[in-house]
Length: 288
Length: 258
Ligand SMILES: Nc1ncnc2c1ncn2[C@@H]1O[C@H](COP(=O)(O)OP(=O)(O)O)[C@@H](O)[C@H]1O
Ligand SMILES: [Mg+2]
Image (cartoon, rainbow over all chains, first blue to last red; front, side, top):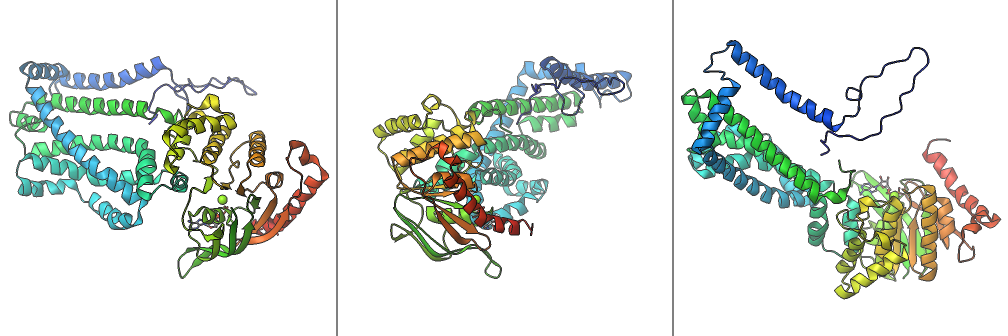
């Protein structure tokens, strides 16, 4: 979880070896080198700028039909319209509610089950092989079935998003929970704690930082499955709007919404990351 | 409290392919006696301690605490492991209070006892630190303070100082021996450090490998209180040599050096 750009490891003093003095590469290019805050910021922005530049250049050169590849300015303008007429807020709101509902459902089921599967052999044998099997079934293949079962109702979206996250999440929770050292469990037992008390007061709490990271990943998958379910059968939401725009060849809106989706995903992930950093401050700098 | 093992066996592995971590082990620890168990890595020391703690079921033989069969863990037996001993999300003080609460100490007494124990191990100033903010030695001192806080009658320690640097380890040994000499308890102390075993114990027990059993018992009749100056006495050195002699042959064999 240390995806910070500012490493502050001391740089070794440059010494000149025997023979000709060697010029060393700048620290940002060295293997396991270092980077300062400004360099980090500039390089990150440069990455974005590069993509934007290529996009602008290709669309300005006119190698592709403008209806197929709109210009960055066109996309921004179209997004501006959506903001002005307020439609985008409704789309985000609907999609967001779906994600939250499905995410919470998956998490509320995966966490207790994962804890039991990780630490009690009965549940491990009963549910781990099953989850591993279902996890490898392609969720997309369930989409037609989901429409047959649920129609284009909310329950259909809930089912697809849940299907896409729950089984992978529960297995990740199992791994997180297994990583709680056996010693902590044994210490709890020597205090005379019952199994269920050890699970609740030690195992669950000890696994929480790992589970938090797994939930962050699961949140990312939710966006993918949300879009899949909305594009195939919906009458509202971001995916529905994208699908509708396809009919009118409104590529400006499609690309605009894709960027908005990326931004929303990024913002939520960063919020969760920051919250995790505060919640688990006790782990110190050594947290991996 | 006394601990007694006779013909003790602990088997891992399958029915067809059994692996005896401990077998035919006999050991008796008297009330308030400090006994260290030394032996090569993997000879079954931790397994023996787990049986005493009630964390590991025996496969055969007898395991008694005060004459009663050991049946699960109990508040009468406190355990200190080498690492992962503190709950990382609780401060030093909270770790002790957690234990006191779980063993059923009344709420108004918990704070006082926590402060008293932190003081006893010299960590009053670190009460509000999280384990990640403490040195390895400090963490083990908190673990010792925690286990002593609920006053078990038997102390089971599995290489508690094994991960510490030499100087810290020495200070911890002196701390432990001082505490024990003031308030005697029955202690089963696992270590692979012969010096440590001789310095702390009333008796050193040597375990052998595959299957783990008790090979030799060396009474340590050094006077108490034990002081750091004693370790240079010819008596101390001779005892250390004696224990080493029992382990050496075995280690050579295990490491395939003979
Ligand atoms: N839960 C277990 N399952 C299988 N084998 C084990 C288990 N615990 C210990 N062993 C084996 O039993 C032997 C003794 O282990 P242990 O008591 O930890 O030795 P020591 O503490 O002396 O190093 C080792 O060979 C170890 O691999
Ligand atoms: Mg061991």
